[in-house]
Amino acid sequence: MPDSYVIEVDSQTAGIVVRNTGGYLFFASSRRFDRLEGRLFRNAREAERAARRLVSGEVRAAA
Image 1 (spheres, rainbow, N blue to C red):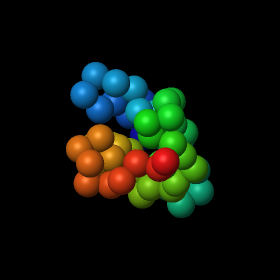
Image 2: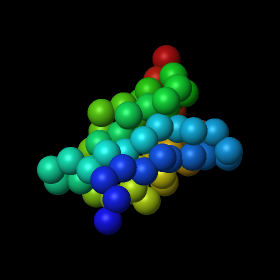
Image 3: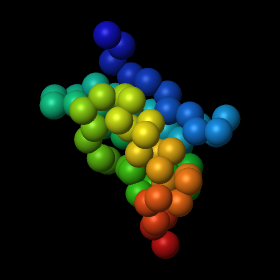
């Protein structure tokens, strides 16, 4: 299993997740995804879903 993944949403790089103790740590690649910065996810797919929810408006972006 890879130690890191690039997370993309609608052809935009949201960030990367890096395997850490207990899951995958998210590092945002643009301010649009800052709300996810530093969050720990169980797996890369969960991080991707969170980024998609942020883009779709299901999660309010940080001001």
